[in-house]
Image 1 (cartoon, rainbow, N blue to C red):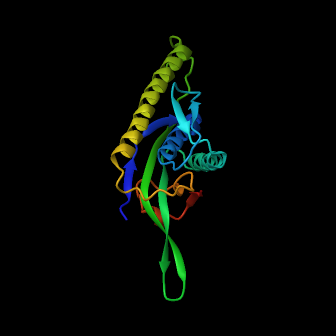
Image 2 (cartoon, rainbow, N blue to C red):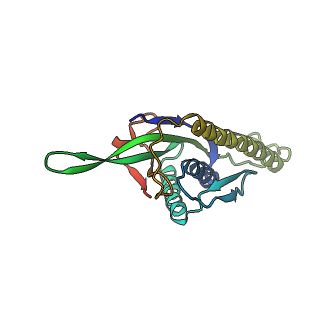
Length: 210
């Protein structure tokens, strides 16, 4: 089976922005791969002037939130590293052997979300030569405002990248099962962004099952 891969644009975020950014991206992907009857729910981000859509499934929302928590914990344990989270869709196939049957996951789509978590420098009221700086707090506020606006633009770019991908890549999508809300999927955190292995051989898997 052909497995399509989408590497999303890297986003530079601060720690407190991770949750909202991942919610927006992961729910957008899942919504566009939803099956059957969904109950669309518009969500307004608190940090950005962006609205995205969730499927309206409480259990799915809970699972995604749990995986975001685990991802944030991973980031806290691995500071100053570029971080990556992968959302994969698959279907189950029965493999028949002479003595037993075995279910096999066939992955048909993978989304790699790339984040660069930064730590803003603290602004001091004095420069290195002990001379007072001109409005350091105001300058820091303006700098963060500019950075936040840039991140909002980049996040919008990622959302458009997702929409473009799902509209162009359709031939690999398996037949629809009307009984399921969405295709079976899992979220994984690769050990290193420098070595991206096929998802079925990555050891530290974190699953979402529907």
